[in-house]
Image 1 (cartoon, rainbow, N blue to C red):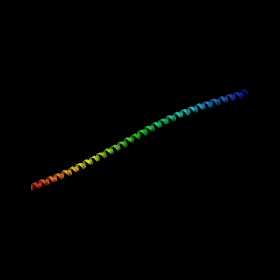
Image 2: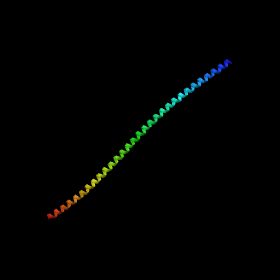
Image 3: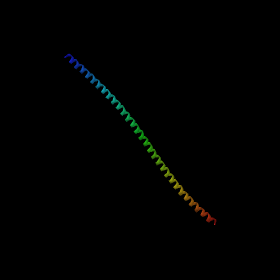
Image 4: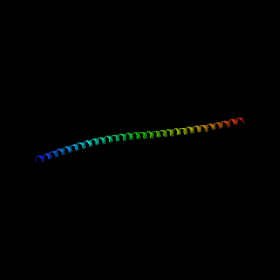
Length: 110
């Protein structure tokens, strides 16, 4: 019976040791894999967030600058058109006045 007990004890020791080793090794692999996955996800989230923020800011700045430039150019053009109209009306008035004065002088000469 001693041989049988020895075989059972040796077998049980081997099963416990092998199972324990496997469980510890697998757990360590899972913990390491979890750490790798967590680190990778942190990197992905950080990189993606940085890219999204940077791209969004670039777009906001570009669109804002486009709008500011367009509005400024519109204002400048409108202002110049308004000034041109004022100059044109003053020029017409001046030409009309000059013509009237010239007619008066020519009547006075006659």
